[in-house]
Length: 311
Image 1 (cartoon, rainbow, N blue to C red):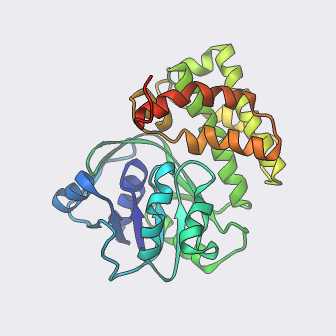
Image 2: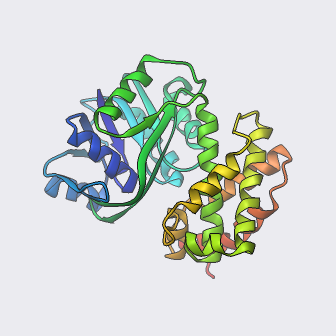
Image 3: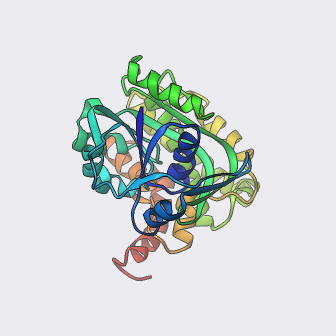
């Protein structure tokens, strides 16, 4: 199976690196300094589970489609998905399919517009990692895992093939009973923790140890849970409690990537996370007052980062 990794940051670099290190046929799709580093130096991953390096990898900017991919794993930031979707379509072979691994719940629809609905699966990953330099990744928390499957949850040969490749690479992988529910339960966690963490300006330990801020976080999660149920998505009844328990198990100094981007003045996934919650709430008639507050409080920073206005 030929697997293209679109986006070689923390997520794509780690999981693509693991696949390539296991001998899978991997094509890294990147640009700028990351592409140059991949071609010159390969890929380096520093991990709490053991460091590894690949001195030589196959890397492209996506313009060369002479060797099409059986599967494309999309690991760019959520706001970049529409931008890379046409390139993903060009990378795919005749029977190829796409799995988004980033945050949010809008990527499958955005990718389907470019590649066709039947060629898109649902997916998510869990990892605490960051890119510390071009083609240099540091994994420092959480057992890395991938959850994916058909959006209609039917068994399929393509799911089985990708699952086998991921397991061969030693990656913790799950094909859930409901792919959409799994994506929304991840979304419930990441959107709420990102928004609250960014507004509070502190890491997980400080957020969860302050009763008032923890209460805000719990309310934000419940709003997203209600949105999922309003769409007949079978998120578990105790999804909020599970998300909070997972959050409590994280290292005290952990921050979310959207939070770090906002705090550092970089464009973030605000629209794809908190903004998506607010928009869907308005469409479905589901109140989202806490997420609305988080969105309003963070929007000026996002606009400034994108130079649309100034603070």
